[in-house]
Image (cartoon, rainbow, N blue to C red):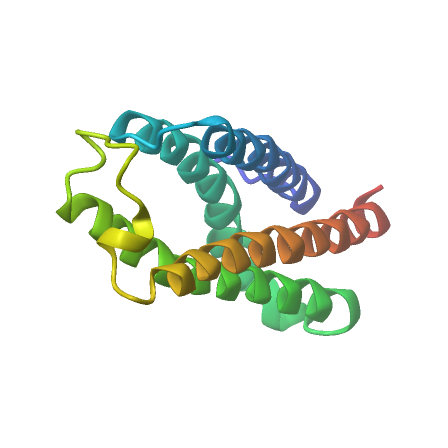
Amino acid sequence: MVALSDATIATLVLVAVSLSFPCFLYGAWIMIDAEDVTWGVLTHHLKFIGTGLTLTTVPMLLWMVPRLFDQMAGAAAIHAFLGLQAYAMLVFGFTGIVRVFRAKWAHDLYHDYDEDVLLDEIGSDRMQFWRRRIRIGVFGYTFFWILAYLVGVSRYAIKYL
């Protein structure tokens, strides 16, 4: 088995995580640009978001987390804290996504879109609350992801360049 140097692995991780950001941006643009969120639009959006999450999460789980406790000080601790906050915001947003998805699925609005049906009418009386959770979760994830990314790039530059 070929052993890769720490710098090579760090570079591959940096490239993978860097490639995730355009996936997130394009996935977000798909939803913002869509007038009607049909099943096709949703699955197209999820392909890019899923790819972005994979490019970020796999390196985190396989390389960053196992090394974390050996270097838990200073910038590494800040990087880990910001990354953890990003994933916490993602989970927060998912709680709203599940409710909106279930309401739209129950009324078959992904396959038979009806522009006259409002989400507030088909969901519970808390649908605005769930939609707000999605917005806060997505914004929070993006905000903390960018901060964690910047700290990670700084750590990479200091350690490997």
